[in-house]
Image 1 (cartoon, rainbow, N blue to C red):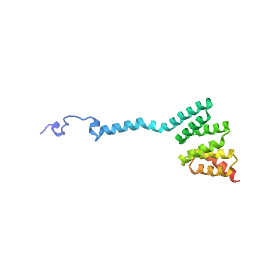
Image 2 (image 1 turned 90 degrees about the vertical axis):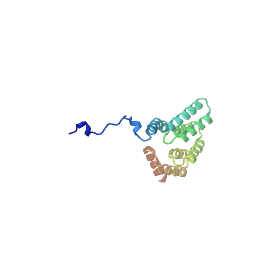
Image 3 (image 1 turned 30 degrees about the vertical axis):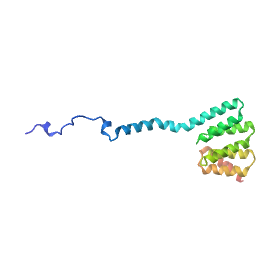
Image 4 (image 1 turned 180 degrees about the vertical axis):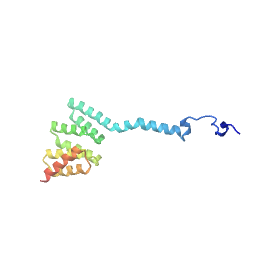
Length: 166
C-alpha cells in the first residue's frame, strides 16, 4: 500500500505571484491605476477650468476692465456643462453694466458652440425678458425645456412658458 503523500498531486516547482499568473498582468494593473488616478481629474477638470476663468473675470472687474471680464466669463461658460456660476456671473455683469444685449450676444455664442446645453438658453431667455422680447424669450424657454434642464430650471421655464402663453 502506498503512503498518502504519494496520492496528492505534486506542488509546482515555484509559485508565481498573482500578477505573473494573469495574462498581461502588468498592463491590467497599470490600466487600473491610470483610470483610478485620472478619472477624478477628467471629471472635475471642466469645472476647474471654469473656475480659473471666473477668477480672471473677477479680477478684471475689480480693475474696471469690463471687456476683459466679459471675455473671461464667456470662456468660463464655454467650459461649463452644468455649472451655473459662469452664466449667473455673466448675467450679473450685464445688469451692472447695463449691457443686456451684449449678454444676449454672449449667450448666443455659447449656444452656437454648444447647442445641446440648456443653461445658455435659460439665461438668454431671461435677458430677452429684460428687453421685453416675449416671443424670443418663449422660444428660448421652450428650447431650455427640450434639453432636459435641472429641476429648478425646468420649473422656472415651465412657469415662464405658462406666463408668456397667457
